[in-house]
Image: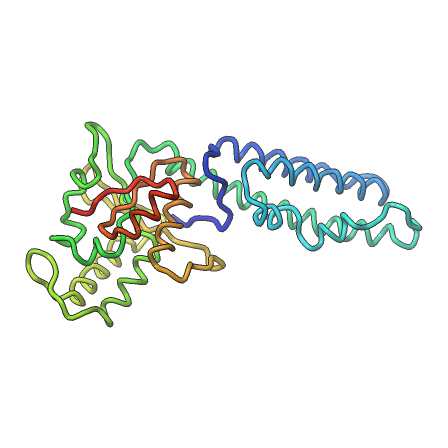
Length: 278
């Protein structure tokens, strides 16, 4: 699953977010008829109203990405008193360019959100995100772990293990630069554990858009980021941030699995459920 770059605020249901996006998308799609003065006036009203509406679901930076772009500010700051013959065509062209871009952005985001809603939001699974140390230091390799016990699965429920791409990158680093220590019940070399783990993930995630069944009640899937996503400098902080993003966009109680006290304290302060690594 690839998360979109745009993530809603915490506490907003996907149904509500999609309702806001659909409303502002429909409204800008209906603009554009009439002379330049009318088009400009209606666009300026749309931009102001849309920024207010989407402000209930997104932060200010996202509002700038979705509505208040550079071209938008040009249109917002253009006065409606002008010579129609001189400025009318320019107003129409600028508006059409902005309208086309906004429709593309909204359509793409709505499609991605609906895909995630269909796959995650209606799922009864219990979501668990293990940190890198779990994959490296657990008694057994992750595919043989007792995930039902780890996640505290309730009767009839399922477990979905989510692996952020930040964890994969850290495993790649550890397979080369890992400490010379032994891990797990079989006292495997840390670098070897990282290599074996990555090899298993490679085989499981050949299709990035599908989950892999570890057992009849446990599935694992990769959490990818768009190319334009900028990871946080700290791997621990990046994993926590991705947990929060998955929680906000899915509406699920996403639990972080870690034994690291610093991660536990930070994740708890951010409102995440934390599971102790056993």
